[in-house]
Image (cartoon, rainbow, N blue to C red; front, side, top):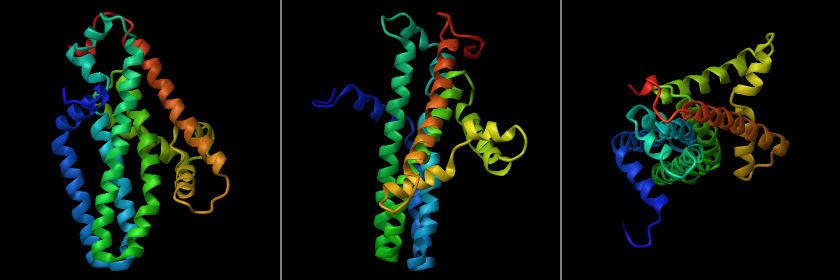
Amino acid sequence: MIRGTTCAELRALALLRSRLVPLAAAALGEVLTAAALALALGPESGEAAGDLLLASALVVTLVLLHGVVVADVRSGVVLLWLQKPVSPVRYYLSRAAEVTACALVLVVALALATWLVVLALAGAPAARALVLVTPTGLLWSVSLAPVVFACSAWGAHPDTLLGGVFFFYFTWVASELGGVGGWKEVGAWSGAPLEDIAALGAALSGAPVGGVAGAALAVARYVLLWTAAGTLGLVVTLRSPLPGDVAR
């Protein structure tokens, strides 16, 4: 163990090493594409680079959350935790929280690298537009993470694929079919509140936005709903000392 390094940091480093190739590919693609946009659009490239950062935040979150629970269930490693005097439910909840925090750190690092590239190639106005969208990217990551965690906790494989489908499909339902029959209620509770995420992100970046408290509550409700679904999935998945059929 490296002196001064905590167990959480060691777990984060191990996770990053295991996902190094896809993370490096996502980061390189983000930076190179942002550079191309800056060269092509100049000062007008800030908005496009911001949209690119939002997409990269989702990719980073999916890569890191992949298999957060179901990988242990399928391999049988979960048996180690079921035999120890610790709560496996609490353990996997804390693991999901750690991985989400790691994703947020990487999104900030990616935003900083992209900002430096855009600043150097397109100037301060474009770089400032990128900075303003960074809080929204972090909120997108925070909103997607519990969806993937919930799918993983219920034993879905691949959990990232199903989590992404749920995230985008229910969000589409909320935005496109929000006023059609019972879809309004389905979308209100399961679809990502994109408008509230954008409003809260703008407020965090310093823009004068009204209704911030309501937006924060909507985002918190969404995160807590999927976290609760994941917790219930953990209870069901870990109810037996032996892995289920999904592990075979």
